[in-house]
Image (cartoon, rainbow, N blue to C red; front, top):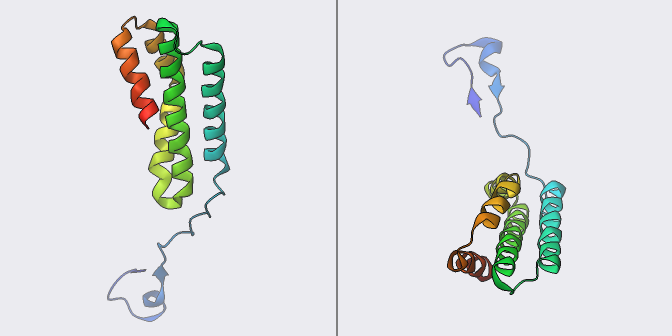
Length: 126
C-alpha cells in the first residue's frame, strides 16, 4: 500500500492507495487461450490430413506448418495453466497466431528441402 501525501495530518493522512489488484483467475478459466490452443491443434491436424506429409517438398511444407501450429497450441496451454506467470506465453502464441498467413506464405515459397526439413524436425522435437 502507498500512503498519499506524506506529512499531511488529519483525514487526508488516513487515505491509502491500494495497488494490489485482483487475484489471478484459476487455471482452466482462460477460455480464450484454451480456444486458441484447440483451434491451432485442429489446424495442425487438418494440414497433416490434406498435406500428404512425408512426400517431397509438399510434405515438408505441411509438416512445418502443422509443427509450428502445434507448438503455438502447446504454448497457449502452458501459459493458461500458469495463471499470472503464463501471460507472456499466451501473448506469444496469440501474436504468432495472428501472423499464420504470412508464415504459411514464407513456408510455401521455400524450395529448400534442407531448411524445410530442419523446421519440421525442430517443431517435432518440441
